[in-house]
Image (cartoon, rainbow over all chains, first blue to last red; front, side, top):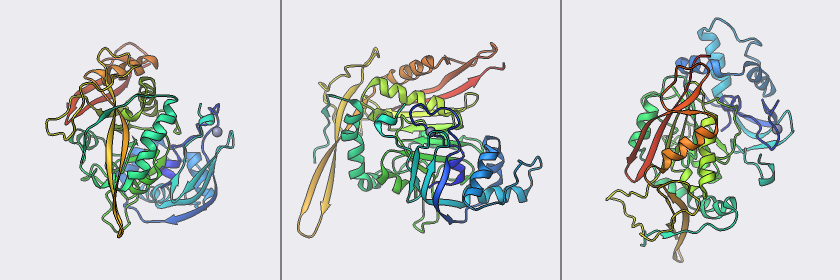
Length: 123
Length: 276
Ligand SMILES: [Zn+2]
């Protein structure tokens, strides 16, 4: 599965690609929405690790505009529910992710992103 | 049914060797293998149960994903992302802990355990269970440990590594030959052994009942070899090995557990960083 929770942590690792290699850009995606259990304690703990701009931009790429451009200082339940939906309920089933730096393409198939590199692409 | 293991000799490119003797085998035996792997090891279950809410981790070599649903009493309090090279195992891991209704979906990513497809230091914890022992040289096993160290937070990252031991449980069904080949390339004072472990797969059809035997490559670790490899990996990354130092700007790791459980060796690592 690739959800934005995972996507926000992924970076390109092709040979020689060390800077500007994040976030990977979605292309030709098929999305499924599946309800997940809301866990505010998890979200509060995870919040400091999020690259906010990457999350907002990536959510927009796949058609969700519910998050504010700036991470709010006040973390209330409404905000956490939007965050929950964006991080954990949008499933990217098919499509691909392209590195913004070297344009390497990582395919997503049956909900599983393939980050394997061919031997000559490994750093 | 023969369960005995035989010595293995690594020839040629280690990556090609692992492709044939590890990855290729797991793709073929994935569903049968998964049926036999459902009980979590107590040390690993405890490690996961002790994690604080909100932590995100990587299960590097997740197999059928049996650790992804843990801890069971706090579902969703921590998120473990499963990584494996086998597409067939990942298809199973995606639904690990599912009641059969298809509702529970895990996060899984296809990659090699030597890959580094993550923002550096982004995980709070990582587990590597029965995985590093499938890498065919000491250098590659050490590289895999370096990856784990680089994946977790230098300030508070926790890592648990679990590998197969030469020292087998008396309940083990396996006989280890005394003449099994000692690793040629190990720098360790005590050497592990390179072996093949057979996996017998029955393929029943109406016409016939066929049996296919696959041989998986393992490096069985000797006593002390795992913690020594961890210390070498950490030192090469410029990390101090030992309890946290008060000296400003130092980074290090402490091995807080170094033990043996049911035919396996394990170490638990905690990362620390002094104030700068
Ligand atoms: Zn790239």
